[in-house]
Amino acid sequence: MLVHDHDVLTSHVEHISALMFGLTGRQFAPEAMRDQLLQQLELLRDQMLEHFGFEEEAAFPFLVEKVPGHAQAVRALMQAHDRIGRSLTETVELVTLTNRDTFSLQVSPVAESFERFVNNYRSHVREEAEVLTAMEAELSQSQRDALSEIAKGLV
Ligand SMILES: [Fe+2]
Ligand SMILES: [Fe+2]
Image (cartoon, rainbow, N blue to C red; front, side, top):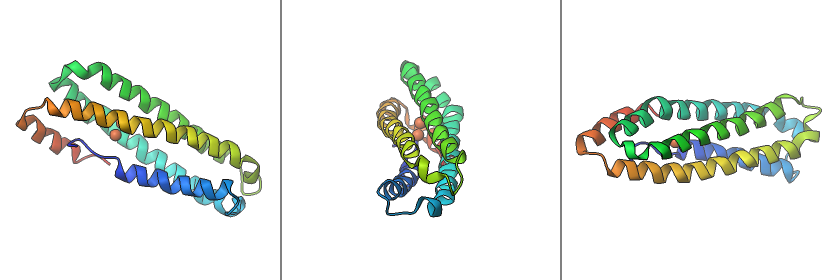
């Protein structure tokens, strides 16, 4: 795909999923993992919001201007950004409300909240790949080159 891929974000999501799996399976002590988990979640949230911001401010407007027939599908992608952002922010807030002593009581709700985020994220990655591939196929060569330049700014 010309616009971007999600490999860096997805590998970060998988890293945190592995931490969650270790916590829910009791392989990791919650009190020892809480601070690291929070740090990783905050970093992922920041990367994710930066990624969405770039798409919404640079890549999507360019594509919608050149290929306006897909504007409705692009609006749906932006609505998914809101859902993903809300679910990840909820996970971060749930961990923030704990401390090293109380985190063990909140592992299940935190893991469930993160799973909701992961499901939203994964379906978005699939939908976005389909929409952007279809839009890119309708671009001229010079428009593709311009889009590649724009995409260099993407996380
Ligand atoms: Fe994306
Ligand atoms: Fe996106």
